[in-house]
Image (cartoon, rainbow over the protein chains, first blue to last red):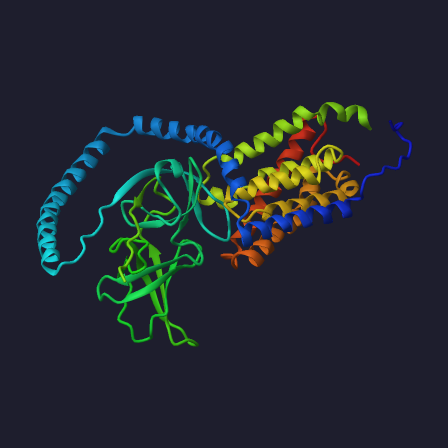
Length: 281
Length: 166
Protein backbone atom coordinates (compact mmCIF):
# COMPACT_ATOMS: atom_id res chain seq x y z
CA UNK A 1 0.00 0.00 0.00
CA UNK A 2 1.02 3.55 -0.58
CA UNK A 3 2.34 5.58 2.28
CA UNK A 4 0.51 8.90 2.57
CA UNK A 5 2.48 11.71 1.04
CA UNK A 6 4.67 9.44 -1.02
CA UNK A 7 4.43 9.59 -4.78
CA UNK A 8 3.18 6.36 -6.21
CA UNK A 9 2.90 5.25 -9.78
CA UNK A 10 -0.04 3.14 -10.74
CA UNK A 11 -0.43 0.79 -13.62
CA UNK A 12 -3.94 1.99 -14.33
CA UNK A 13 -4.87 3.63 -17.57
CA UNK A 14 -5.07 7.40 -17.60
CA UNK A 15 -8.43 9.19 -17.63
CA UNK A 16 -8.24 10.05 -21.31
CA UNK A 17 -7.69 6.42 -22.34
CA UNK A 18 -10.54 5.27 -20.12
CA UNK A 19 -12.80 8.02 -21.50
CA UNK A 20 -12.10 6.81 -25.03
CA UNK A 21 -12.81 3.18 -24.12
CA UNK A 22 -16.16 4.04 -22.50
CA UNK A 23 -17.06 6.34 -25.38
CA UNK A 24 -16.49 3.47 -27.82
CA UNK A 25 -18.66 1.15 -25.70
CA UNK A 26 -21.36 3.84 -25.55
CA UNK A 27 -21.28 4.37 -29.30
CA UNK A 28 -21.50 0.60 -29.73
CA UNK A 29 -24.61 0.53 -27.51
CA UNK A 30 -26.20 3.37 -29.47
CA UNK A 31 -25.55 1.69 -32.81
CA UNK A 32 -26.78 -1.71 -31.59
CA UNK A 33 -29.91 -0.09 -30.23
CA UNK A 34 -30.81 2.23 -33.07
CA UNK A 35 -29.75 0.14 -36.09
CA UNK A 36 -30.28 -3.45 -34.98
CA UNK A 37 -32.68 -3.18 -31.99
CA UNK A 38 -30.58 -5.71 -30.11
CA UNK A 39 -30.95 -4.19 -26.66
CA UNK A 40 -34.71 -4.64 -26.26
CA UNK A 41 -34.09 -7.53 -23.87
CA UNK A 42 -32.07 -5.23 -21.63
CA UNK A 43 -34.95 -2.73 -21.67
CA UNK A 44 -37.45 -5.39 -20.65
CA UNK A 45 -35.14 -6.54 -17.85
CA UNK A 46 -34.73 -3.03 -16.42
CA UNK A 47 -38.46 -2.42 -16.72
CA UNK A 48 -39.22 -5.58 -14.70
CA UNK A 49 -36.74 -4.46 -12.03
CA UNK A 50 -38.05 -0.89 -11.85
CA UNK A 51 -41.76 -1.70 -12.08
CA UNK A 52 -42.34 -2.27 -8.33
CA UNK A 53 -40.25 0.81 -7.47
CA UNK A 54 -42.35 3.02 -9.73
CA UNK A 55 -45.58 1.54 -8.40
CA UNK A 56 -44.45 2.33 -4.86
CA UNK A 57 -43.29 5.85 -5.64
CA UNK A 58 -46.62 6.66 -7.22
CA UNK A 59 -48.24 6.08 -3.83
CA UNK A 60 -47.44 9.46 -2.18
CA UNK A 61 -49.12 11.51 -4.89
CA UNK A 62 -52.12 9.17 -4.84
CA UNK A 63 -52.44 9.49 -1.09
CA UNK A 64 -52.28 13.27 -1.47
CA UNK A 65 -55.01 13.15 -4.10
CA UNK A 66 -57.16 10.95 -1.84
CA UNK A 67 -56.72 13.35 1.06
CA UNK A 68 -57.52 16.30 -1.19
CA UNK A 69 -60.67 14.53 -2.34
CA UNK A 70 -61.70 13.89 1.25
CA UNK A 71 -61.85 17.58 1.96
CA UNK A 72 -63.78 18.51 -1.18
CA UNK A 73 -66.64 20.85 -0.45
CA UNK A 74 -70.12 19.39 -0.30
CA UNK A 75 -71.40 22.16 -2.56
CA UNK A 76 -68.80 21.30 -5.18
CA UNK A 77 -69.83 17.64 -5.15
CA UNK A 78 -73.48 18.55 -5.59
CA UNK A 79 -72.66 20.84 -8.47
CA UNK A 80 -70.58 18.13 -10.08
CA UNK A 81 -73.41 15.61 -9.64
CA UNK A 82 -75.88 17.99 -11.30
CA UNK A 83 -73.63 18.50 -14.32
CA UNK A 84 -73.03 14.76 -14.57
CA UNK A 85 -76.76 14.06 -14.50
CA UNK A 86 -77.42 16.62 -17.21
CA UNK A 87 -74.62 15.13 -19.26
CA UNK A 88 -75.99 11.63 -18.71
CA UNK A 89 -79.44 12.65 -19.94
CA UNK A 90 -77.91 14.10 -23.07
CA UNK A 91 -75.80 10.99 -23.62
CA UNK A 92 -78.82 8.72 -23.20
CA UNK A 93 -80.59 10.59 -25.97
CA UNK A 94 -77.59 10.24 -28.28
CA UNK A 95 -77.23 6.55 -27.34
CA UNK A 96 -80.78 5.98 -28.53
CA UNK A 97 -80.00 7.74 -31.76
CA UNK A 98 -76.80 5.71 -32.11
CA UNK A 99 -78.68 2.45 -31.58
CA UNK A 100 -81.08 3.40 -34.30
CA UNK A 101 -78.21 4.35 -36.58
CA UNK A 102 -76.39 1.11 -35.85
CA UNK A 103 -79.43 -0.93 -36.75
CA UNK A 104 -79.83 1.03 -39.94
CA UNK A 105 -76.12 0.75 -40.70
CA UNK A 106 -76.20 -3.04 -40.21
CA UNK A 107 -79.15 -3.33 -42.55
CA UNK A 108 -77.53 -1.15 -45.19
CA UNK A 109 -74.27 -3.04 -44.93
CA UNK A 110 -76.11 -6.32 -45.28
CA UNK A 111 -77.89 -4.89 -48.28
CA UNK A 112 -74.59 -3.79 -49.84
CA UNK A 113 -72.88 -7.04 -48.76
CA UNK A 114 -70.07 -5.16 -46.97
CA UNK A 115 -68.05 -6.60 -44.13
CA UNK A 116 -69.18 -5.48 -40.71
CA UNK A 117 -66.74 -3.42 -38.71
CA UNK A 118 -64.80 -5.34 -36.08
CA UNK A 119 -65.76 -4.72 -32.47
CA UNK A 120 -63.39 -2.87 -30.20
CA UNK A 121 -61.88 -4.32 -27.10
CA UNK A 122 -60.45 -1.84 -24.63
CA UNK A 123 -57.88 -2.10 -21.87
CA UNK A 124 -57.92 0.47 -19.07
CA UNK A 125 -54.49 1.78 -18.19
CA UNK A 126 -53.13 4.47 -15.92
CA UNK A 127 -50.21 6.74 -16.63
CA UNK A 128 -47.31 5.68 -14.47
CA UNK A 129 -44.41 7.85 -15.47
CA UNK A 130 -43.72 10.65 -17.88
CA UNK A 131 -40.52 10.29 -19.84
CA UNK A 132 -38.08 13.16 -20.12
CA UNK A 133 -36.71 12.55 -23.58
CA UNK A 134 -36.34 15.66 -25.69
CA UNK A 135 -36.50 13.84 -28.97
CA UNK A 136 -39.90 12.19 -28.53
CA UNK A 137 -42.68 12.73 -26.03
CA UNK A 138 -43.56 9.52 -24.29
CA UNK A 139 -45.51 8.32 -21.28
CA UNK A 140 -45.33 4.97 -19.52
CA UNK A 141 -48.52 3.04 -18.78
CA UNK A 142 -49.03 0.45 -16.07
CA UNK A 143 -50.35 -2.20 -18.46
CA UNK A 144 -48.19 -4.25 -20.79
CA UNK A 145 -47.88 -7.44 -22.75
CA UNK A 146 -49.65 -9.45 -20.04
CA UNK A 147 -52.85 -7.44 -20.64
CA UNK A 148 -52.68 -8.15 -24.37
CA UNK A 149 -51.05 -4.90 -25.47
CA UNK A 150 -48.76 -4.88 -28.46
CA UNK A 151 -46.78 -2.34 -30.37
CA UNK A 152 -48.79 -0.07 -32.65
CA UNK A 153 -52.10 0.04 -30.77
CA UNK A 154 -53.92 3.39 -30.47
CA UNK A 155 -54.35 4.98 -27.03
CA UNK A 156 -57.24 7.37 -26.32
CA UNK A 157 -58.70 9.24 -23.39
CA UNK A 158 -62.18 10.66 -22.91
CA UNK A 159 -61.53 13.64 -25.21
CA UNK A 160 -59.35 12.34 -27.99
CA UNK A 161 -56.39 10.44 -29.33
CA UNK A 162 -53.42 10.32 -26.97
CA UNK A 163 -50.91 8.37 -29.01
CA UNK A 164 -49.65 5.00 -30.03
CA UNK A 165 -48.07 2.16 -28.08
CA UNK A 166 -44.47 1.94 -29.24
CA UNK A 167 -42.71 -0.37 -26.78
CA UNK A 168 -44.25 -3.17 -24.78
CA UNK A 169 -42.75 -4.70 -21.66
CA UNK A 170 -44.40 -7.49 -19.66
CA UNK A 171 -45.95 -5.21 -17.03
CA UNK A 172 -45.75 -1.77 -18.60
CA UNK A 173 -45.64 -0.10 -21.97
CA UNK A 174 -44.45 3.12 -23.56
CA UNK A 175 -46.77 5.35 -25.54
CA UNK A 176 -45.50 7.92 -28.05
CA UNK A 177 -47.81 10.94 -27.87
CA UNK A 178 -49.46 12.41 -30.98
CA UNK A 179 -47.63 15.66 -30.37
CA UNK A 180 -44.27 13.91 -30.38
CA UNK A 181 -41.94 14.95 -33.16
CA UNK A 182 -42.28 13.00 -36.38
CA UNK A 183 -45.33 11.11 -35.09
CA UNK A 184 -47.69 11.05 -38.07
CA UNK A 185 -51.48 10.69 -37.81
CA UNK A 186 -53.73 10.45 -40.87
CA UNK A 187 -56.68 12.77 -40.25
CA UNK A 188 -59.56 14.46 -42.01
CA UNK A 189 -61.14 17.84 -41.41
CA UNK A 190 -64.53 17.26 -39.79
CA UNK A 191 -66.23 20.19 -41.53
CA UNK A 192 -65.12 19.50 -45.09
CA UNK A 193 -64.04 15.87 -45.03
CA UNK A 194 -60.69 16.65 -46.63
CA UNK A 195 -57.96 14.22 -45.67
CA UNK A 196 -54.50 15.21 -44.51
CA UNK A 197 -51.54 14.22 -42.46
CA UNK A 198 -51.03 15.62 -38.95
CA UNK A 199 -47.50 15.55 -37.63
CA UNK A 200 -46.33 16.25 -34.10
CA UNK A 201 -44.11 19.29 -33.81
CA UNK A 202 -42.85 18.65 -30.28
CA UNK A 203 -43.82 21.18 -27.59
CA UNK A 204 -47.33 19.65 -27.39
CA UNK A 205 -48.54 20.93 -30.76
CA UNK A 206 -49.36 19.39 -34.09
CA UNK A 207 -49.19 20.71 -37.61
CA UNK A 208 -51.25 19.68 -40.60
CA UNK A 209 -48.86 19.05 -43.44
CA UNK A 210 -49.11 19.44 -47.18
CA UNK A 211 -52.34 21.43 -47.31
CA UNK A 212 -52.51 23.35 -50.63
CA UNK A 213 -52.90 27.12 -50.26
CA UNK A 214 -56.52 27.19 -51.43
CA UNK A 215 -57.71 24.61 -48.87
CA UNK A 216 -60.87 25.48 -46.98
CA UNK A 217 -59.67 25.38 -43.40
CA UNK A 218 -60.04 27.85 -40.55
CA UNK A 219 -59.16 28.06 -36.88
CA UNK A 220 -61.60 26.03 -34.80
CA UNK A 221 -61.95 23.13 -37.24
CA UNK A 222 -61.69 19.71 -35.65
CA UNK A 223 -59.44 17.00 -37.03
CA UNK A 224 -60.53 13.35 -36.68
CA UNK A 225 -58.60 10.21 -37.53
CA UNK A 226 -59.43 9.13 -41.06
CA UNK A 227 -58.75 5.44 -40.53
CA UNK A 228 -57.09 4.92 -43.88
CA UNK A 229 -53.90 3.77 -42.20
CA UNK A 230 -55.71 0.81 -40.59
CA UNK A 231 -53.92 1.62 -37.33
CA UNK A 232 -56.37 4.08 -35.81
CA UNK A 233 -60.11 3.47 -36.04
CA UNK A 234 -61.85 6.23 -38.00
CA UNK A 235 -63.44 9.16 -36.21
CA UNK A 236 -61.35 9.65 -33.09
CA UNK A 237 -60.91 13.39 -32.37
CA UNK A 238 -57.25 14.35 -32.65
CA UNK A 239 -56.79 18.11 -32.63
CA UNK A 240 -58.35 21.51 -33.17
CA UNK A 241 -56.88 23.98 -35.64
CA UNK A 242 -55.49 26.97 -33.77
CA UNK A 243 -53.81 29.04 -36.47
CA UNK A 244 -53.69 29.05 -40.25
CA UNK A 245 -51.07 31.11 -42.03
CA UNK A 246 -49.73 31.26 -45.54
CA UNK A 247 -46.04 30.61 -45.77
CA UNK A 248 -43.98 32.92 -47.96
CA UNK A 249 -41.77 30.28 -49.45
CA UNK A 250 -43.72 27.05 -49.88
CA UNK A 251 -46.88 26.19 -51.80
CA UNK A 252 -48.53 24.79 -48.66
CA UNK A 253 -50.45 26.37 -45.80
CA UNK A 254 -48.97 26.43 -42.35
CA UNK A 255 -51.67 24.92 -40.12
CA UNK A 256 -51.03 24.72 -36.39
CA UNK A 257 -53.28 22.57 -34.20
CA UNK A 258 -53.64 21.85 -30.52
CA UNK A 259 -54.26 18.26 -29.43
CA UNK A 260 -57.71 17.59 -27.95
CA UNK A 261 -56.67 14.83 -25.55
CA UNK A 262 -55.22 15.89 -22.22
CA UNK A 263 -51.74 14.74 -23.15
CA UNK A 264 -50.05 15.83 -19.96
CA UNK A 265 -53.12 15.92 -17.75
CA UNK A 266 -55.10 12.72 -18.15
CA UNK A 267 -54.10 10.01 -15.73
CA UNK A 268 -56.38 7.29 -17.03
CA UNK A 269 -56.40 6.23 -20.67
CA UNK A 270 -57.85 3.46 -22.82
CA UNK A 271 -55.91 1.26 -25.17
CA UNK A 272 -57.99 0.10 -28.14
CA UNK A 273 -57.27 -3.47 -29.13
CA UNK A 274 -58.52 -4.62 -32.50
CA UNK A 275 -57.12 -6.97 -35.06
CA UNK A 276 -55.74 -4.95 -37.94
CA UNK A 277 -57.99 -5.54 -40.92
CA UNK A 278 -56.41 -6.96 -44.03
CA UNK A 279 -57.82 -5.71 -47.30
CA UNK A 280 -58.83 -8.72 -49.39
CA UNK A 281 -57.06 -8.69 -52.72
CA UNK B 1 -5.85 13.98 3.88
CA UNK B 2 -7.43 10.60 4.30
CA UNK B 3 -8.48 10.77 7.92
CA UNK B 4 -11.30 13.38 7.86
CA UNK B 5 -12.65 12.08 4.58
CA UNK B 6 -13.06 8.49 5.61
CA UNK B 7 -16.35 9.01 7.38
CA UNK B 8 -17.71 11.29 4.67
CA UNK B 9 -17.14 9.13 1.65
CA UNK B 10 -17.93 5.66 2.93
CA UNK B 11 -19.57 3.13 0.65
CA UNK B 12 -22.85 3.39 2.51
CA UNK B 13 -22.96 7.15 1.89
CA UNK B 14 -22.16 6.73 -1.77
CA UNK B 15 -24.62 3.91 -2.44
CA UNK B 16 -27.29 5.55 -0.29
CA UNK B 17 -27.11 8.88 -2.06
CA UNK B 18 -26.99 7.35 -5.53
CA UNK B 19 -29.98 5.10 -4.75
CA UNK B 20 -31.85 8.13 -3.45
CA UNK B 21 -31.03 9.97 -6.67
CA UNK B 22 -32.36 7.10 -8.80
CA UNK B 23 -35.53 6.90 -6.68
CA UNK B 24 -36.10 10.67 -6.96
CA UNK B 25 -36.04 10.34 -10.75
CA UNK B 26 -38.67 7.61 -10.59
CA UNK B 27 -41.23 9.97 -9.04
CA UNK B 28 -44.06 10.87 -11.42
CA UNK B 29 -42.82 14.35 -12.33
CA UNK B 30 -44.94 16.41 -14.67
CA UNK B 31 -45.28 19.85 -16.19
CA UNK B 32 -42.81 22.57 -15.27
CA UNK B 33 -41.28 20.50 -12.51
CA UNK B 34 -40.38 17.91 -15.14
CA UNK B 35 -38.89 20.51 -17.46
CA UNK B 36 -36.78 22.05 -14.69
CA UNK B 37 -36.04 18.79 -12.85
CA UNK B 38 -32.36 18.59 -12.03
CA UNK B 39 -30.59 15.46 -13.17
CA UNK B 40 -30.22 13.97 -9.68
CA UNK B 41 -28.20 10.97 -10.82
CA UNK B 42 -25.75 13.09 -12.80
CA UNK B 43 -25.20 15.47 -9.89
CA UNK B 44 -24.69 12.48 -7.57
CA UNK B 45 -22.18 10.81 -9.85
CA UNK B 46 -20.20 14.01 -10.47
CA UNK B 47 -20.23 14.83 -6.76
CA UNK B 48 -18.72 11.49 -5.80
CA UNK B 49 -16.30 11.61 -8.71
CA UNK B 50 -15.07 14.88 -7.27
CA UNK B 51 -14.79 13.64 -3.70
CA UNK B 52 -14.07 9.91 -4.11
CA UNK B 53 -12.52 9.46 -7.56
CA UNK B 54 -11.10 6.06 -6.61
CA UNK B 55 -14.53 4.62 -5.94
CA UNK B 56 -16.91 6.31 -8.35
CA UNK B 57 -15.84 6.95 -11.90
CA UNK B 58 -16.39 6.02 -15.50
CA UNK B 59 -18.02 2.60 -14.99
CA UNK B 60 -20.63 3.80 -12.50
CA UNK B 61 -21.40 6.83 -14.64
CA UNK B 62 -21.82 4.65 -17.70
CA UNK B 63 -24.23 2.19 -16.13
CA UNK B 64 -26.29 4.88 -14.41
CA UNK B 65 -26.38 6.60 -17.79
CA UNK B 66 -27.86 3.46 -19.35
CA UNK B 67 -30.47 3.49 -16.58
CA UNK B 68 -31.30 7.12 -17.39
CA UNK B 69 -31.64 6.16 -21.04
CA UNK B 70 -34.14 3.50 -20.11
CA UNK B 71 -36.09 5.92 -17.94
CA UNK B 72 -36.57 8.44 -20.71
CA UNK B 73 -37.22 5.75 -23.28
CA UNK B 74 -34.29 7.26 -25.14
CA UNK B 75 -31.62 5.66 -27.24
CA UNK B 76 -29.31 3.42 -25.20
CA UNK B 77 -25.94 5.09 -24.84
CA UNK B 78 -27.20 8.65 -25.16
CA UNK B 79 -26.94 9.56 -21.48
CA UNK B 80 -24.23 6.97 -20.85
CA UNK B 81 -21.82 8.75 -23.18
CA UNK B 82 -22.78 12.16 -21.82
CA UNK B 83 -22.24 11.10 -18.18
CA UNK B 84 -18.84 9.62 -19.03
CA UNK B 85 -17.83 12.92 -20.63
CA UNK B 86 -18.99 14.72 -17.47
CA UNK B 87 -16.86 12.44 -15.27
CA UNK B 88 -13.84 13.10 -17.48
CA UNK B 89 -14.28 16.86 -17.21
CA UNK B 90 -14.65 16.68 -13.43
CA UNK B 91 -11.51 14.51 -13.13
CA UNK B 92 -9.68 16.97 -15.38
CA UNK B 93 -10.66 19.98 -13.25
CA UNK B 94 -10.74 18.14 -9.92
CA UNK B 95 -7.92 19.88 -8.09
CA UNK B 96 -9.22 23.25 -9.20
CA UNK B 97 -12.83 22.51 -8.25
CA UNK B 98 -11.92 21.33 -4.75
CA UNK B 99 -10.51 24.75 -3.89
CA UNK B 100 -13.74 26.66 -4.30
CA UNK B 101 -16.60 27.38 -1.90
CA UNK B 102 -20.01 25.92 -2.88
CA UNK B 103 -21.23 28.94 -4.83
CA UNK B 104 -18.15 29.21 -7.01
CA UNK B 105 -18.01 25.45 -7.34
CA UNK B 106 -21.56 25.42 -8.66
CA UNK B 107 -20.65 28.22 -11.05
CA UNK B 108 -17.71 26.15 -12.30
CA UNK B 109 -19.92 23.07 -12.58
CA UNK B 110 -22.39 24.93 -14.80
CA UNK B 111 -20.30 24.66 -17.99
CA UNK B 112 -19.62 20.98 -17.24
CA UNK B 113 -23.32 20.22 -16.79
CA UNK B 114 -24.02 22.22 -19.94
CA UNK B 115 -21.47 20.17 -21.87
CA UNK B 116 -23.09 16.96 -20.64
CA UNK B 117 -26.50 18.16 -21.77
CA UNK B 118 -25.11 19.25 -25.13
CA UNK B 119 -23.61 15.77 -25.53
CA UNK B 120 -27.06 14.26 -24.92
CA UNK B 121 -28.48 16.71 -27.46
CA UNK B 122 -25.83 15.87 -30.05
CA UNK B 123 -26.27 12.10 -29.67
CA UNK B 124 -30.03 12.38 -30.01
CA UNK B 125 -29.67 14.71 -32.94
CA UNK B 126 -27.36 12.36 -34.81
CA UNK B 127 -29.27 9.18 -34.02
CA UNK B 128 -32.94 10.10 -33.75
CA UNK B 129 -34.41 13.51 -34.55
CA UNK B 130 -33.67 17.17 -34.37
CA UNK B 131 -34.70 18.24 -30.84
CA UNK B 132 -37.77 20.29 -30.00
CA UNK B 133 -36.40 23.64 -28.97
CA UNK B 134 -34.09 24.87 -26.26
CA UNK B 135 -36.17 23.54 -23.37
CA UNK B 136 -33.56 20.82 -23.26
CA UNK B 137 -31.15 23.22 -21.55
CA UNK B 138 -33.47 24.00 -18.61
CA UNK B 139 -32.39 21.06 -16.41
CA UNK B 140 -28.84 22.41 -16.46
CA UNK B 141 -30.00 25.28 -14.26
CA UNK B 142 -31.85 22.89 -11.98
CA UNK B 143 -28.77 20.71 -11.65
CA UNK B 144 -26.50 23.69 -10.90
CA UNK B 145 -28.81 24.86 -8.14
CA UNK B 146 -28.95 21.31 -6.77
CA UNK B 147 -25.15 21.16 -6.73
CA UNK B 148 -24.98 24.43 -4.81
CA UNK B 149 -27.52 23.15 -2.28
CA UNK B 150 -25.75 19.81 -1.79
CA UNK B 151 -22.25 21.26 -1.53
CA UNK B 152 -23.45 24.05 0.77
CA UNK B 153 -25.35 21.63 2.99
CA UNK B 154 -22.30 19.40 3.37
CA UNK B 155 -20.08 22.33 4.35
CA UNK B 156 -22.56 23.48 6.97
CA UNK B 157 -22.86 19.88 8.15
CA UNK B 158 -19.10 19.74 8.70
CA UNK B 159 -19.23 22.99 10.64
CA UNK B 160 -17.60 25.24 8.08
CA UNK B 161 -19.19 28.45 6.87
CA UNK B 162 -20.70 28.81 3.45
CA UNK B 163 -18.13 31.40 2.39
CA UNK B 164 -14.39 30.84 2.27
CA UNK B 165 -12.59 32.86 4.90
CA UNK B 166 -9.37 34.28 3.57
